[in-house]
Length: 506
Image (cartoon, rainbow, N blue to C red; front, side, top):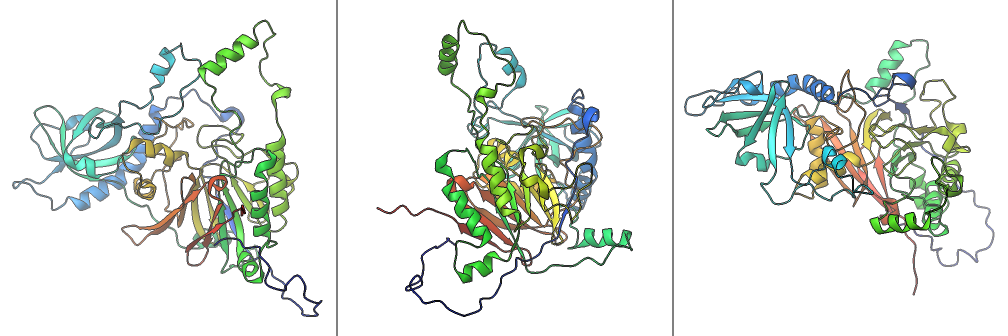
């Protein structure tokens, strides 16, 4: 649906009218944030731990679910009169025995970055840009299964039919061949976890606090999801943002479209609100800059002369104009001013001098009543009108894309859900915090809506689980490139796309 500002014939020349027009009120929404991906505060946030503990915690969390799925699938499995037996560790596999084992998948690829190689190549002035794909020709990558005991090389034609990446917890059935490799016959993954009922968490919170007023249950609203605003502060990138703001405020369309816009009860901005103003310079550019500055005093740390406040000011103004009318949830992205490792902390309130009046007061926990403006983590989970939302700004999906030969991003999103992992390739090729007590990227509950921002194009689909779970998947395109906003109905979970574009007449 495109925004049309063309007036009807005679609308500009009509006489004043005494007709009383209906006042439109925006549909209410109930937002209940979760703290799934919050990191420890202050001195409790440590980075000295080993990442191996994170893999062991992930395996311990998902192994029971994989074992249950595998046992149910292979209970009647039989080859040449032999039934496969489970072995506890990958090193307990014996040649010629039909068995199955659970472990962590590891992909060895020729183009995958290696931090030890990067450190050894001291002649590099700047890090190389990320590769589009880690894979080359089909079959050159090696797949292994590992646990606390060791690694086992996997082989077999079935592996080419299953989408797998480093970090996924899987069960494989087969036998060890004469070369010491495990010949895989079938593969199983944890599949979708339990999906909470709508309003389950809100009803549970109300039951624990009987003195609280009976919560209202808003119906019939919609949520708009946009990503990749890429605000740079340049004069040329303001017009489409102004059109988007006017559309969300109901100022740029006719009465029919205004009634539809009034049903949008919440706005989610899924990362990359600011553009990347500092691309990686080339080697020649660095050498030229070094020669130019030779003989001048070196500057270290913060340089006020190089700081440009225009992008953050423009973003703050954009949000402040919307917030009196619509609540906003803001996820950080790869280019936004926060930590680059996952989970990314929320963008600091100091970046929003005008918008932070709509945020929770300092040292107070977020509640459904004080989160009209909610800068949150990336990834993020929250309940909106009773439905569980899980979303990222795109980095985990983009990294999975580099591991596989295909281009189908919805298939990769479905695989993430069935692996029960929000960021499976972390920490192998995706920077993340070294969790010790448990892997925060493990999905403990199945969402109703799973959205991923900053994707090449809009895509949507529904994935179904073994116990009737249904998840609406939404790939949200970058707004700066496409001008598209995704709108999800909060009753049917149906999806539509609104396109904001500028007419360039000849």
